Length: 148
Length: 82
Figure 1 (cartoon, rainbow over the protein chains, first blue to last red):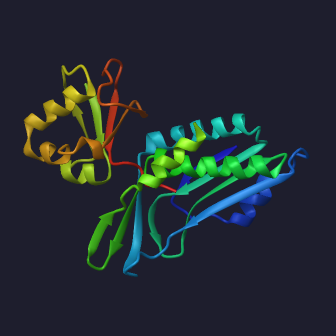
Figure 2: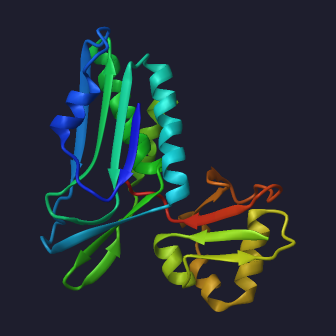
């Protein structure tokens, strides 16, 4: 298991190679990564991601442990960046390794749903006219219900 | 003494990222009321509590949670990571 909250970019290829290299029980790896996209007005200059340093690692570890237990994962990886990110930059990635694909897919979705609304990160969109904090979406909150 | 932290727009409205607060409040809600009475900027920051989440010692909790054992309390908008 690896959890990293970092300023720097990451190499998905390298991460997955390292992730999936020695356990012969693993038959399925699912990975997801999020990218900084433009807003509807196409005016985004960059994004600032703020975090609560003491809590992020703790909160993510908590949900990774739940996922490992619930879907019998052999490995799990979460990387989340903070600080200033430009259009097209990678924001975060999640990877899960299981014996079968169903467990890998479901646990990756579970981790994504919880990262979105339970890990202490806040996105700020900076445009030429100023900035605004990204509002949480009700859909993100209700997405958690299917896991309870 | 409790370390009180603020994030995102809550931090901007309060004007500081954190502060040390001496308080007799027993719950999160009592602390919020105490802060709101202190200065106008807290009133602005805490005007809509349905838009604010709270964590005690880095774990999410509710506004009626007791402050017993709390060394750190944080106020922030709903998270928008991922």
